[in-house]
Image (tube, helix red, strand yellow):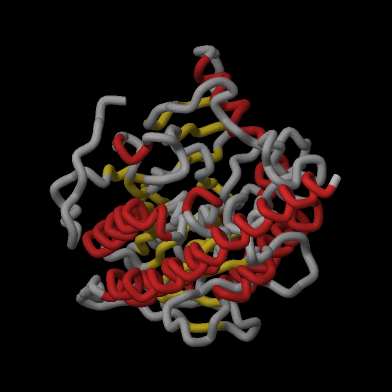
Length: 411
């Protein structure tokens, strides 16, 4: 008994020494990472749009021209000394694409952090702070919605604490809002685009698809949570509110200021950004893979790179897609999570778009693969229409500050 206790104490002591050693190393490494991030220059805009805030504190941009949104996802910054070189590659890629695209808004749809033991830290604050520093240094307006890895059960900081990190008042360009309305999740929020007449041309909605179910709190079995009922009701309220806003404003505008496509304004046109794809994405992908003959499905581009079941969504039934169809507002939904998928399908009139992932770290060997790495550019026109383009990072137009790695683009 005494020998067993002695062995246990020795193991605990060794683990404590290892933990303290990595903690010290990560703290010393923090300065070097910050210096690396600070080496990237601010993006030069000819005429950068600046957001304003309405009476409810909701950010909005005003333009009579196109509005460019850049969607990035699954950056997967480990934040520790063991992931440092891969973290630098991810930061280099993000900075290069933003610098070239000069978007009006960047939406990062989750899994910014991947603070796992083999990164050298489970302090997820490192990853989030590095990303915040990069984005604000670049001087581009940006926001996030969270993924399952942004606050693991074993990480230092839970989801609410991570949300508070992004509400840091010192951030000049971050438009994240954790939403204290009592609904499930963190960061269910809205950013609007208006024309000079005041009409909303696009409502950009960010929603938290949460992480894992109580049945699988550590995510070992990949049992994912999804959008909860009160979040869907919040979404309904958003669409109702801004549709009424547009309708009331249209009633007061002179005919010379009214758009030709009035119906596209009376029901506000929106797009939705989440992390984990909803069940209807799997449904649409399966129809595509089965080569189903149906007018409800249209292939728009991209590929499936994940293995069966291809789409790693929640198995919990929810009414998000049905509500989107009912309200007729959201014409496109963007997500990540499945790093090797970048397929875009139109299903029952709604465009379902995977984003290109950034990940150099989470999947074994993914740093050597490149066909899935890049960004999604969404050009929103003033008539409420939009165009989606997937952009590979490995194009000549993306000139990183540090050398771009050679990867396999054939997979």
